[in-house]
Image (cartoon, rainbow, N blue to C red):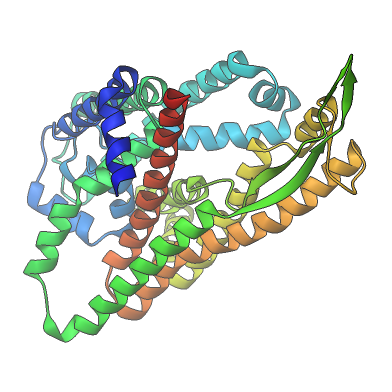
Length: 423
């Protein structure tokens, strides 16, 4: 306990670290203030009822940090930027030039990569904004907007999406932690008082076993996420002895820690971003008079409403995105090359190609464990919702997973900063 208090004291006594923490807090306060500014012409009562009964909009509201529940200028949240990041990551598989830019060209290449992601965010925000405005107008939540008012509202929410993207990038650059994850985290945490008040208002003693079950599952999810996030597969590494004059260097033994869950919470966010589109497109097409478009709309809406089919695809997407993100961010070939250049080798494994193949085999095995775990944790709340009929399970489980992962990542980065200060 004393160590924890000492670390907290160091955070606020170190000027540089204190500035970073205060910058994050200030940016999140600004984000919460902006999320309360609504676009005009809203029926608040209809909006609250519609969002509470719609799982899709509940998830989208989580991504927007609660901005959608007020139809604020930040109603799209970080959704368009996350989707553009997914598109850019997918393009690295098809384009060796983009892959080299992301992995090998250093900071300059990553800045160009991020710039492309920003450019793709704009058309995605326009498409998502239009689809959402048409959906809300159809449900009577927005009045019958004229073309001018529609374009004005669209311009405002697209600008809001770009603004929140900029705030997130500023947090990543001048603060601590991943800005986009922290914005989603702040939105989830801000909704906790409202969720608690609603729970107390609707509390029913007859449902006490279900509440206890939900609490137990919540603790299991937290424990599982902590264990899987901290779990590592150590690979022993030995540095060859080198004679330099009268001195012998090297000969030391260490290990290479491979995390079981290299991708963190990113696959969950990626999968949710992709699965938001079927209902968004289905609702947008539901008002069309064309029979083909209506059939497509019914099929997409059936897919979203069928919990078991939706859960199956959700699990598959999380599983695949875990492998995909690990493959993009972790390159065994480059690692094997770096080990060989530094005179290091894995005992019993030849340097070069054999080392790369060995690391790939180990990485594939542990990533399978991490991917299955993430997939199960992601769909478990949906299955519980199908069994119990309580919609809050479907959103609450995902929110809990994101919150725990973001907190763990933030703690690690703060400890890394404190370690640098100590040295």
